[in-house]
Image (tube, rainbow, N blue to C red; front, side, top):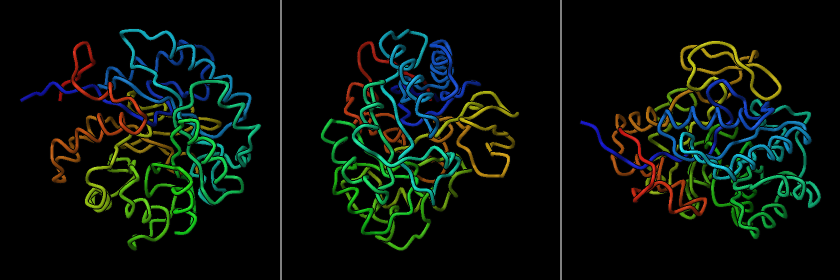
Length: 312
């Protein structure tokens, strides 16, 4: 039996359909990502840029903004931009190139903000200048997400108290200490005011850790794919940021074996959640209405006249 549901909203898309967003050279590259996502039921998304050279990032942001301002019916809507870097911890960079990590300053933030519509910025709260940056961005209406961080319990609380309202792919690129209320993940799960983003693809997190997370954030978990350029294409080797990733058996790995992002679909994540015993309503909200609420777009992720839909 099929169900018509609101089209999905993905808050973290690094690439799709063979295009790595940080390597995009034209608006057509961005649109190719948008078309590929729509084919998988994603009606709107945040193009997400990992850490890279400032000039390259700003150039791509301008391309994304051009596409955002001229939407097309055969493409997923570009809502805004998620800057996943460069304000991250050197201790938890994941696949972000350490050479391009930076500390936030007013001048640097200004360069990013004037290049495009910034919707989410991921920040490690423990790095110098982070708390001031979180306050500044929050006051501008930009969602701040804590992530790629080795924050202590105190530093995590400080980041959320400064205005951060969510956490980027919980458990990935941060401590996996599961003691309640300890470290960034523990604090995010403990605080009822924090939205918890996680990847549910059977690769980034074990099913047991997903269940543990959902049980503690049952009404505030948001599922994303952290999709990279090979998503939607199958197996092979593809560009991502300043390096290459190889996809095999559902895993996208850098040459040194570091997990480089997701190649699954939100529809697959939805069905994985159902198989774990998560309710239909909650699983659906995690890829529709909850991410929409987080970024202040309640018009997305709901069934409405003229709104986009997909079929489950």
